[in-house]
Length: 64
Image (cartoon, rainbow, N blue to C red; front, side):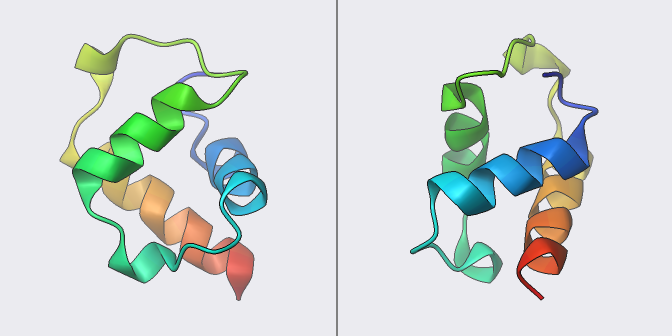
């Protein structure tokens, strides 16, 4: 899984961290949690604030 797979990342985060409110996640934690996902395999340097915002929003939408 790559940084651009925002929807899939959001689904996996929702499954892996059901106790977390994605509206309250800081980007440092979010980035670390994404990189810790078992299927994730991408360069951390390819991640930026815009990608993390997209992941966060997709995660929020996933729980709606």
